[in-house]
Length: 445
Image 1 (spheres, rainbow, N blue to C red):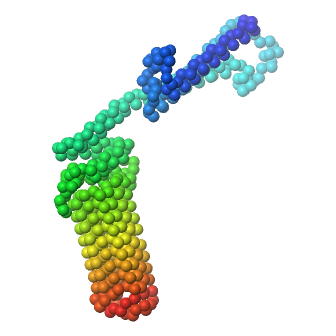
Image 2 (cartoon, one colour; image 1 turned 60 degrees about the vertical axis):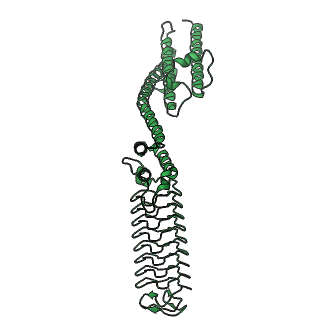
Image 3 (cartoon, rainbow, N blue to C red; image 1 turned 90 degrees about the horizontal axis):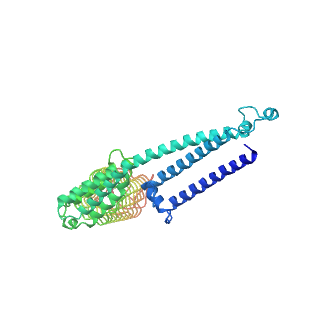
């Protein structure tokens, strides 16, 4: 073969390679951009697999990318193999002794560059192997997607059907819809937020709420929806588990007597809700907005209310025994005759709160703000009031027998003859004894 023929053959190989690269780039661009097809492009699109035809979903993009990469790698490997075969054809001029002697040592990088046939052979091998691996990976991914797609479609159909059933006039149908949504939320992490939104809207808007009896129980379907809201994140095998709370909007709901014991409603919005007589024993209400909520005679014993907002809430006669109330906002809250015995109220804001006849035995009020609070006839026996601010508090008839008042500020506090202070407490206005300050004449118990 003459040198001119060799040059022509190399030029032909490079030309074919450039054309192949341009075709691959054009096809890739059209597939990824979804550009409108011309007459010649439509037959190509019709012969492509469904997942290769735009527009693409997020799940289709990995498949498209793998397919294009596998095709390009295989084409490069085959092209290198073809070029290597051309270089091995007979007729090439044998090397002269001088050229043989000038060749680099075998196995070195210079030798690899000096022998293009060897380099092309290696590129061909790696290109074909890598292309086949990518093609196999594409097929596996397509197979996995083909099994997941029907499941997703069935979930969507079940969700749509359940939402439609929530509007049924028959309570049996509505209950079945709520159970369906609960199962969807437990089976799919992606559907949990949507389920919570639907359930919260159902509780807020359903007309059965207006029929709730005073201190009775809400309608069965509303109770079930509330249970789903407070338990959907406790589903087994969930990555986020109990720590991921619903943050649902339940403002102004009317569900007196509802059973929410042990449920997880942390960070939920329950402002101005009617929860009279509701059972919230052991419930997680941390960071929950309960401002203005009516919790008259509600059961909140052992509930987690850390940093909850109870601004102007009605907690009269509520059972808060053993509740965790650290960091809670009880500004101007109504706590008349409430049971707060042994609760943790350290650092709590109780400014102007109504605590008349409240049971505060053993309660931890260290560092709490009780300025202007009404504590008439409150039971504060053995209460911890170290560093508490009781400025202007009304302590008439209050029982503070055995209370720890070290560092408490009782400036301008109101007392009377029925006020019982700890043994050894001074009886002089404005007199500082040790760390305790008293502000009104009284008598020791």
